[in-house]
Amino acid sequence: MKRIIASIIAILTVLSLVACQSTPEEVIVVKKDTERMLEQAGMTEDGTAVSALGIPRGKYIYEAADTSNRLHIKADAKVIVPEVEQLPVARVSKGRFSYRDMENFSRLLGAGSIPISLDTPFPKEYYRPQLNHLMEMRQNGRLDKYASMEELDNAIRELMDKMEQAPETAQAIEHDLSFKPMENGGETVNLRWMRSNAVLASLSVVNDEQGAGSYAEYLRDVTRRAEFSTLTAQGLSVTLNYEQTRNPNFKKPAISETDAMNIAQAAIDGLDLKDFVCTGKRMAALYNSTIAAEDGERQGLYEFMFTRSVNGTAITYTNEDMAADPGRTDVAAKPWLYEKIRIFIDDEGIFALVWNAPHVLEGVEYKAVSLLPFEKIRGIFESMIVVKNKQVEDGTLLRDKNITVTEVRLGLMRIIEKDNNDTAYLVPVWDFFGTYDSDGGTLVIGEDGYETLLTINAVDGSVIDRTLGY
Image 1 (spheres, rainbow, N blue to C red):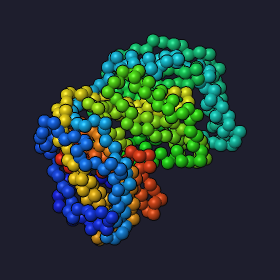
Image 2: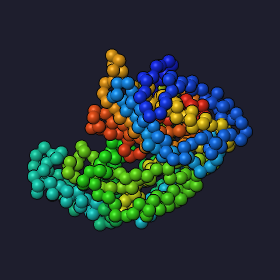
Image 3: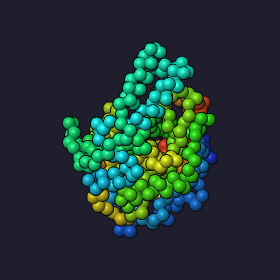
Image 4: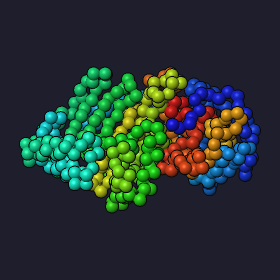
């Protein structure tokens, strides 16, 4: 799991750095106080212009090592800022999907497919790929999950019987787009389509305003769910799975990135999301090592990430899925998914769409906030990146660690008030993205470009833990 600062660091002494630039002599510690931060944000009516922050025209350059020469930090990073002069602070709350959203989903994702019910019999062609797979297994003498060849033969006969009894064409029905209550609270809609009488597609939409947040997930081929789940799992799974795009068996889509992006943008337009912009893109690979052969093909997808924009400034996309991760024992706040939309495109179009935690924009608290100069921000980073990554046992680092900063980005982040999940604030922050490795570089995290090394509040300089949400 990612190493994070579990609590506010009170008094620490930073290891002296041997660097190409001067570094602060003490740790920068700012108490996290939402009320005080908001007061500081609104100190001046006109706020601080981005052009007045002293941001480097070229790149952020920095290099340092600790006194043991085991922790190395290097930055040769592009600095990216919004194309506006003033940044806002806005207030948001948990939202929900509406009947209108369901209409948009149905029209966009069901085009050219047969709408079916949960108990609609599958047509013959649906079973054919499964039967071909089992027959290939038998021919090659592979058993996989079956205990014996006899058990595999029984599975083949059962599948052939299903095909014999199956209709030629799926029976179309009219989908009910209204939400149904769930046993554990919340409400849901589940839709299914049959594509070309052979492939089952599904959409699951859940409204969960009292829990971690509402979400929607569409998958064009449910038989690929296990492979696709590796792309949506929490923790480091997403960034680790990115390594599969470097595998010799990775097959890139034939469609161009530009055409794929146009499809993704058309989906956002079709969902009537005027305030969302593309804030990230990368390749993805459909592959699950627990069910696929090591030399198996990694089907490639384009992935495009969209986040909300307020007054021309977008929420910065990162790999963190949730604030106040329920797996953390030191968290008092309730879990709350970060708002984001991820769209996966292949040669056939939209393969998958995942929309986490739609928000309600309650209002803009400040249209132009006061921001700390970049020199102050970089000083905080250069001190705290050492504190965050220092692993001490008997005064020595446990292993070598190399940190490389590849990008520094100014954007918005949702920050909650501690122990309050009813509302939150979208606040300007600086994210330092990059990679880190250990054990001689055998494992490198963050090569996909969306792993945050450190997040700093651009208003008051406090270090933010994204897995806590503040």
